[in-house]
Image (cartoon, rainbow, N blue to C red; front, top):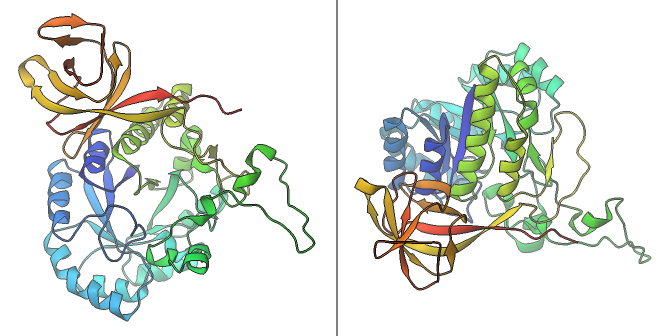
Length: 397
């Protein structure tokens, strides 16, 4: 079982690597489905590939937008460079891009944007030397199992993260309202706004779940942590975590949690651990559902249902390896027992409780903002890493 994690930047990349991902997928400027967030450039991809390969991890590059002539021309220009970096595969939805990638000897994974939903489609793609297919989100676990039984290709499915109102991503709402094409990576997510549906005679549409009625176009996130055994036994080869717009702490938490669940199953002693759900709820989420795996999803989401929010409270100034301590310049108060996150490009994302602090060699229980404090840390951190404090979110009424 391969666990595939997203990375929007080097911090998220290292968070994935350090928390048990087998592979990472990244976007490259100009032809991926997350044009509005940070992406790797043709120059920085080289370093990303090296970091992954040095850690014995694979890296896949997303080039999965709908491509017009100008896009294909750009794609042709960057392919030789990507090939020279020895990326492990391209994630592609366009047939022209598939042709060019294969002509250059690069492995291809067919994107979810291709909406592949039956085994005959996979068998045809095998003739074009496609190595893997990311199956449509609209499939049930029984349909996925039937596809696996009738194909030689590896199959990959999303097992955690946000789900688009168009499910597998073929959406025109952003394009219609704001002239920003979701299929070219420019979606600004108007579906996540609070909407009210009114008929021509001014009747207002009300949902049964009245607390969610303002988010009628926003489905809950997929969360399959309880169903890892069923998914593996259905023949899925790769578990994919959604979130190429998410920060490093999200990637770290979700990757670590699913790594533990997969390892638990593969040990032969599967036992679901409730702490996994608690951990997943700490980071950004819109509530959890199982997508189409077992039923047609019906629940809409609120904007964010995470149990914790993170507040930017400081910056690492120095790290002292011999005593496993960091000097932190504080922008907010901090006390023993607080839970913090330290993030940086090489550090990834480190989450821990504050167990020991000092100022001028003296142990302290609490420190006010504006001061520098020495803090015991559980792993290596680096100057300019950002420090966040996790704050329990107040229950919504």
